[in-house]
Amino acid sequence: MARLALTLDRLPVMLRDVRDTDRRRLAQLREQWGSIRRHLDDPAAAITAAQWACPPGYRDALQLARLILAGATLDPDSRMGGQSFTLPLGAVWERAVRRMCDDLANSTGWHRVSDAERLRRWDDPAGHRDRTRWLIADVMVQRVGWRWVLDAKYKREFADESRADRFQMCAYAVAFDADRVTLVYPTAASNAVTRELLRTTVGGMPLLIDSVALPMATGPKACLAALGSIAAGFACGNETWQGKKET
Image 1 (cartoon, helix red, strand yellow):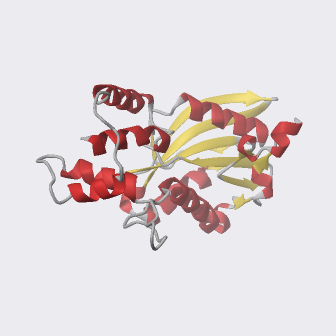
Image 2: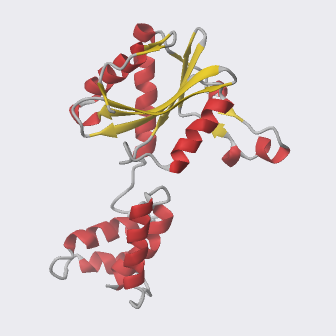
Image 3: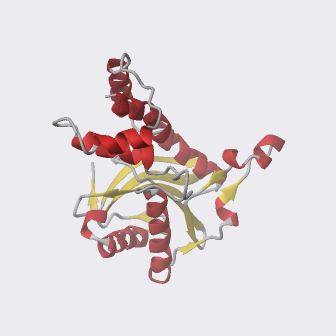
């Protein structure tokens, strides 16, 4: 039990972007396990030993604990990595959205801007120097007279977009003078779905903030086709949704 309690203490640092409901559930669980002793001389060795004498019903939990406690550690003798490793799937999804935009450039007319153009520093001295304060768009594409920012979200929040993400999109719209800002989610659905979050005007110019769920479960080609259909429908102020429009 000490192994699992120690793992619970590590989770808040690893899960910084979880939904409020998950954060509350984790806090309740940590409170329930508050009286359990946490001290282990060698957590990695203890979690490995537990695999051979696992209490009934705890095998899956101990496997996850082993990944969290030992997966990214270094062997003290060889200085090599542990038996497991973690993969930043959010970064993988971001690169996937960027690649899809590149593949669609010729057919849709939306071309990705340079890395320098998708970065906006704050004008005050501290904000200008501090990279953690910069606004960096995941993907920004443009065509004559139009600019579109896409923000890749590897989350289960489509149709439940967080307050922080909504405000982030508004900041992107202002910072990059965008006509449209879109949250892009991967889902297990078989079709693309779009949600309009805000349609307004900024400085007399129209602005659309929305979210899109791409059918990742059906494969890369389906995602590409769905995004291409959405991109082709947004041009010259005439937004048409080729997929399923959620009301």
